[in-house]
Figure 1 (cartoon, rainbow, N blue to C red):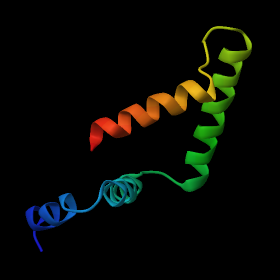
Figure 2: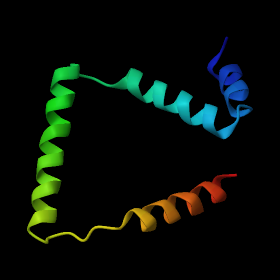
Figure 3: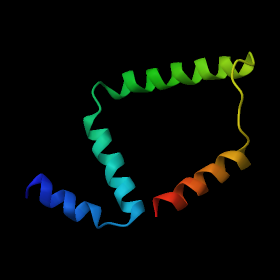
Length: 77
């Protein structure tokens, strides 16, 4: 199958299936080891925690995040 044929078929999938497929494809492009990636994510989490703890960034509430996510999903359909 060509990329064009696969793309046409993939775009006919439901939104959730397309998102899962996109995630799988992105993971397949990931360069580096799982250990290195995990270490990078832990370091990022530590930096963000430090920013929050020191008041350098403002956080959104769960309600705000979910409201924005729901609004974004409605726009995709």
